[in-house]
Image 1 (spheres, protein in one colour):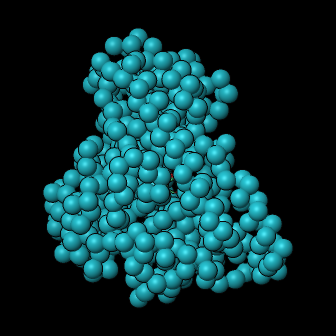
Image 2: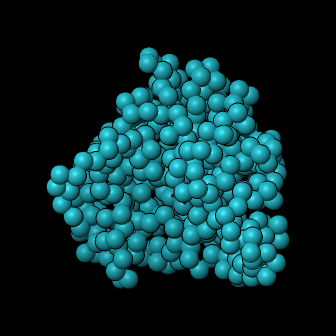
Image 3: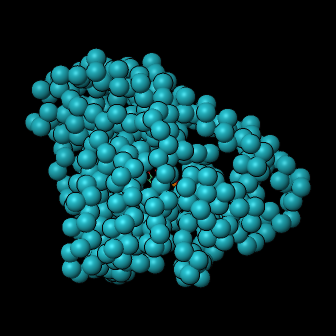
Length: 395
Ligand SMILES: Cc1ncc(COP(=O)(O)O)c(C=O)c1O
C-alpha cells in the first residue's frame, strides 16, 4: 500500500525493509541448498516430548491453561534454578517471562533507550539488536569483535566512557550471531565491571549458550554482575523450538514493575498454555536428552562445514571456529563482494547471507554467514562445493 498522507511515528519513520526476510524468501526453492537460515534442525525438534507435554497439560489443567493468567510460577522456578546452576543466582520473581528473546530485547530497549540517545553495540551483530537500537533512532556507537575471543573490551570501555554516556549496551556472549565466536571468560568479567563502572545497562543476549558442542562451559556475563547493571535475556527458541515463542529476562527486582507495564503495552502476557507445556517438558527431564542429540548433530554438521570449507575454499577464505550455536562466519578475499555474488549463487542452487547484512556501518562486503544446523552433512558438503565454484569464477 502506498503510504500517501499517512504519517508514521518518529520511531517507525526510518524503518527499512528487512533485507534478511527478502534473502530468506529467495531461498525457498527446494533445489537450493540454503546455508542462509538460522533454524534449528526441523527433524530434531522434540515433537514427541512436546506432544506428551501438551496432552498432559490439557488433560490436567485445561481451563487455567487457556485463560489469562499471571506468569507461571513453576516455570519461573525452573529457570531460576537453571540460571543458578549456570552461575547466576536469582530468585524466581526475578525471572520475567517473555515471548522469545527478541521481545526481551525490545522491552529492555524501551525501558532504557530513547530516540537520539547513544547505544553501544557490536559493529557486526544480529539484525534484531540493530532493530532495537539504531532502528529505534538511537545514535549507535559500534565496537569491533575479535573473531577469536569476542567483543573488543578496550573499544567497549571507550564507547561507555564517551560523553554523553550511552543509555544502553548490548553484547552476544555465546556463539555469536552471525560471527560464531564466544566472549572469553576474562572479557565477560570485564564487561560486567565496565557496565557497573560507567553505570550503563548492559543487555546480555544469550539464545545460544545451551547449544555448546565443544569446549568448556563459560558462565554468563551476568554471573559476574555484582552491581545489577547486567540484564540477561534467554530464549527457548533454539533450546527447544522457535514456535514456542518463549524466553525470559533476569532483571533487578526493583525494575520489574516497569518491565511488567511495558510488556503489557505490547501483548499483555505470554500464553499460559505454552508456559505450562514448556514447564512440563523441562520438569519431565526432556531437555537434557534433547540437547544432547541436538548438539551432537550440530557438531557433526559444523565439522562437515569446516572440512568442506577447508577442502574447497581453503586458499581463498578464512572462517571462525564455533564451539556451538548455528553459524560460521567466512571472510573471502577483499576483492570478492558477497552481495554481487548472491544472484550467481542462487543460480547455482546455493544460498547464504552476505555478511554486510549484519554490518551496522556497512562494509564487510567480502564476508558471509553460513548456517550448519538445518542441513545433513552431505548437503552441506554439496552446498559448499557449489559455493566454491561460484566464488572461484569471481576470483
Ligand atoms: C542473537 C540473537 N538474539 C535474539 C534472537 C531472538 O530469538 P527469539 O526471539 O526466537 O528468542 C535471535 C534469533 O535468531 C538471535 O540470533
